[in-house]
Length: 218
Image 1 (cartoon, helix red, strand yellow):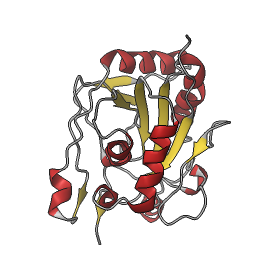
Image 2 (cartoon, rainbow, N blue to C red):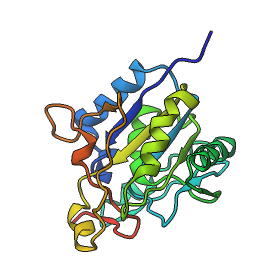
Image 3 (tube, rainbow, N blue to C red):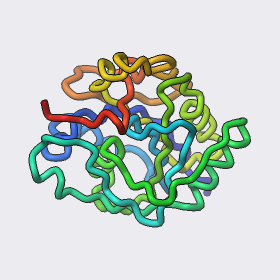
């Protein structure tokens, strides 16, 4: 039997506090995980990991990155030790290289909250191999778009999820880094409901955040 074909997902991950009080948003993520076939792995393109050139995470086991400050102490005690997938990371790097975009592999990079907040609710056992691909918000985001657009054909049983949030539009705008953002959505990509939204939110309305602009509760 052939592997099931899984969609590319666009997830508005919201504030880190969703990990403590997920509400309707968390219920939507849980329902989605039950509805979809179980993936062999997840490739997450998180807006909280920005680099000068495309980089793929490739650890054997993911550390949990608490890339925010000023939030309740219990948030910093949460871990999501999902396995990594070095072989998949190498495959993603080759895919990008074949498209004319040289990508490196960071074998020490863990999961930032753009990845572990939604995944912790979707796959709470932390047993789905997960890797991340960085973004370059200062230029057209063709790397992430190319990766997700090509992934359905290259690896149909692996979810490609782009995790975005609204919080950094002002910060990136002040730094002149909004050019090329938000990236265009691949055809057939599935939107996921955002916090407080009565209907699915399109990814094009969600600007990225940067690892150098950490989330704050203020």
